[in-house]
Image 1: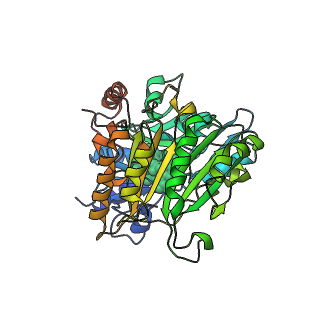
Image 2: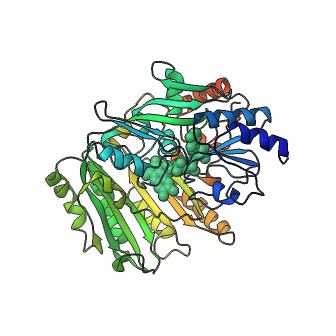
Image 3: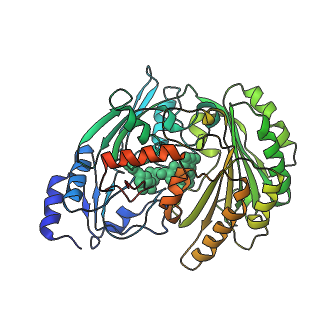
Length: 456
Ligand SMILES: Cc1cc2nc3c(=O)[nH]c(=O)nc-3n(C[C@H](O)[C@H](O)[C@H](O)COP(=O)(O)OP(=O)(O)OC[C@H]3O[C@@H](n4cnc5c(N)ncnc54)[C@H](O)[C@@H]3O)c2cc1C
């Protein structure tokens, strides 16, 4: 059902930000974020500038029984489809650091890069992830697994305040004192309970780390993976790391040693004493001559250089599973399916968990007993999506013996984010508690175009 011009005018009058319908010139740009595969086609888009705009948009949607989607930078997009009202938050860019309290407050549209910069001036660090261009709010609501994770836990473990517009159109400030049950749910259950307009988090006393990437050529992939998994068995919490198998294209934008090569990229982040970091990395350096070794003492503001994630929007499919172990047999299975000789090219990543991530933190983030999380990402178009999807399904099936059966919410995107997989991100008792809360705060599932937890 399209909007009448009267409805459009009523909504435009109520909000300060722009409003778009599909026939508008700016509509496509407004609904497009980093993930360009399976973009939503909302009936109307509200480019919110503040919490009042968000309230007006939610009330408008409620009056017309429209589902509400939210988009910051578009790195996640957990639900596709037609219709509904999309609130874009990229105009909500406020960041405030309070050095004495070691906190950051940021609005819904802020990418991590802005928080990293502002916090670095106060010699503090947010628990951001691999890519500074990812949206800080959604990353945090979905758990948030970053470079300091084994030392400090998930980003969601350090949330103080959440400002949220709930399905009834109310703007609420949620803290552990005001509403512990809702805060427990918000820290890990994404956007199921409303549109978050701002979040206050704790910052860590970190201004530099010993980190970077060790890139090895394809012929060392097996050895590097085996050395890495052995190495991860006995590491202090100060060390957080991951490995990725990356088929690099042959393009001038890449450093010469990586062009056109399938590499294994070990990502290192050690917080604390530099000499201790160097000693810890020695066994990995001993595996062979790396193509590039960028591991060094770096200011935290350069943390994005560890993974060097792509910044250009792209169409991709992704799947992930949480692992209880990653042993030689798992490596053999993985390489047989998605190693350098695989018929389909994809990026495979395995992250080391444990440490502070395994400790309960008074929120609903699940799978805390997991040892690793791994993901497969394939760049696709309409003609290759079916084959990539089948390959990802096969990888998940064949890696099942090492899986706990769990998923990591933030890595569920697009069609991989169905209701069953979302459920696997939580421990079952916590999931039932979330369903009960969803019935209280969003009984009609107004917020369902997300990592959805249906109220019934
Ligand atoms: C290159 C890349 C690197 C990544 N690295 C990491 C990593 O290291 N660690 C990690 O944990 N995750 C990582 N992720 C996953 C990322 O954290 C999630 O996809 C996150 O949801 C992206 O948030 P966004 O705002 O950028 O995306 P969006 O697509 O804009 O948002 C994703 C979803 O979050 C919800 N949402 C967004 N804003 C709000 C709001 N204000 N209120 C309520 N709900 C909202 C909506 O359901 C929305 O569909 C990465 C993703 C990519 C593509």
